[in-house]
Amino acid sequence: MKTAILTDAHTVEIGDTERPEPAPHELLVEINVCGVCTTDLHMYSGSLTVDYPMVPGHESAGEVAAVGDDVDNFQVGDRVSINPSVPCNECRACKSGRENLCHDLTSIGGTAKNITDGALAEYATVPVGNVERIGDLDYRTASFAEPLGCVINGIDQIDLTSGETVVVIGGGFIGQLLVQTLRTSGAGTIVLSEPVAERRKVGLEVGADYTVDPVEKDLTAVIPDLVGDVDVAIEAVGFPETITQAHNLAGPGGRTLIFGVPPEDVTVEFSPFDLFFEEREIVGSYSLTPDTFSRAVTLLDNGRIDVDTLVTDEFGLEGLETAFEKMEAQKGLKKLVFPNR
Image (cartoon, rainbow, N blue to C red; front, top):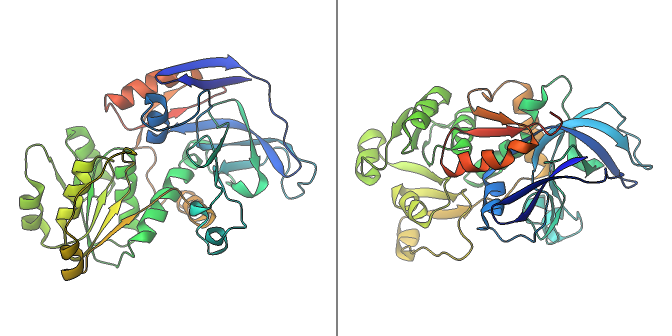
């Protein structure tokens, strides 16, 4: 089968590998579509530590091609979306419903303590507990279930109250998905900070009330004039500067959510007195849980999320490196790969 392999930083090889066989409790899924994530880009660029060679890809959907000997609730031909986070289901985090914090988490093509081959290939094996049936939902839309599940997990962390004012810093794919999900979740006013004009335009189309160019304007001066106190500031870029910016925007009683993936070796400074005196919070969000993945499939199935506006590029496996290059240049939004084209 055709497989995209990261053999080193900035090096992708498209090779022929043996089609895997499902273990007793696994499914073999023929991958129809796989989204290219910023995490994949970090692994490609070398800014995120992984062991090369590896097969990336963790936002996928496809058709069951074979079932393991002990699987009796799925059959060949079933259409599914894949949750790439495989918990141990034994540790304290798993038992408390926080499987994303599993002490022995495995990721199918993503980042975790353990990594197995991902979905940027014609086929992938998946534990039977890590798929959701998608019925007649098109594969293209179903591939959004993993990133949307991560977004839902992030919004869960901030305990959003209906009518609250939220600022999202970063209008890339995830920022746009955050805007839509915040709107669906009851946010009152949503402001998107994004330097790229085309992305600001998309933000208004998918649910932002205001957009601001942070290069042209000082957010800490402009946003209070627009909306008053900010209840929640979400950082969706991963830079220490924008994390600090988000924290500075959150008002008394406000929460700052670090959603973007920051470099592993950076630090930021903040005033603990401000946290104490103004009862402010800084929270993080990592990955997704089986619950948020299932909720994501439901939102997509019911048409709550506009997928088509966010997809700007489609490739076969051979176009993966081009997808990475366009992401590095901040050209377009979501890139999808169709491994069997």
